Image (cartoon, rainbow, N blue to C red; front, side):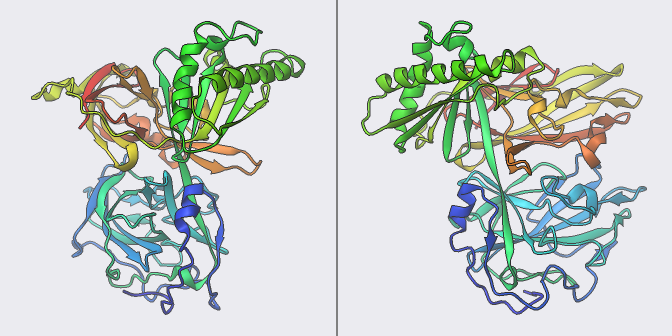
Length: 518
């Protein structure tokens, strides 16, 4: 293992599990060196060779934007139980065009200035519901490969490869495998984690995370779902469960008296509170932007009190404390400029500690064996060209998460834009455009699952939401442009129901597909 500074593995992240669980970005204390490891030059230029690299790949993916760019994980090593060294090799497998890699590898959830860092390389900590990114040292956005400092090529010619690295916190619980993520293409699950020292290619020197003060960057993953009757929607961040109950179901217009239907909606929430390990339940009333604060504020407060009173009567366990408050229209979740957004903003949200998952009941799959492959395809048209959809995978990840992958292909003879992937009903809830127009529906459970969200603290004190799915903004803006015969692969991270044998997958306007779920 080669390191830029002698390795004194200070266990600065001995409590990293707690830090990741909270999703905080906190400085970690460590002994400082006279020169930050992130700014020290590598001992020699990193590998950029037209010959086939010798290191075997542990997993691979392809870029959605430029499918000729292959991404391979060549090393995933836990250091001192606290840190993780991720090594990635990029290869231009094309035959004619050069490919710029720096913009594609950049993490868009943090300010970067110049786009030159491999700052988007990370892993999922599914137990903590966190998306772990490279450390941020003082004076640099990322403890990772730097195209300028490490004298790496800006673009890769056909057949050329480049070796990159990122240093980040190790996932909690010492798992034996991890899902490696990059902004380039679909995540790569089940990559084995080694406790052996990293083996680096010639010219690549890994920095020591214990040599200076660094900041941990972990994005909280929130997985939303909603009942198919639209009476409530739930957001799960791995720590707390927030159930937004539709005010249109709970109350008559401009009233704070619960309707007869409200009891059935509140009964489900009460069962979850009964199963919760926490002793505090927050009940918060919200309104849309219609009306004035003089109307919305007291109405939302009265509605919160009505739900608190009814919920406390339905919860059977003792020792639960309720906190009720109204926020008027000051905390919208969706765009108030649409009828759908205003409907979803009219809500009473009940938040409490997430219950422990119940053992999955054994159910026979509704999916018959031997389903023909053509059952996982759909078709539509865009710009007058025929487009084909193929679902390539729906797999379970640890701790209730799941990964959907699918391909979209222009089967026509002319270039065309397919812009429907980002036109979800709640697309304005995200910081940037992404492939959010995807839902997974459990028909038996009467529940619909939406793409996961990465929560990032905003400068104004709020929280920005980024989709845990394929990005189609910024440098990846042309991901929705397809040449004749061109095919691109997309992905999304979702909560998955424990007992379902199949789900109905709806992607943009391709129509519903019944997809088996292992």
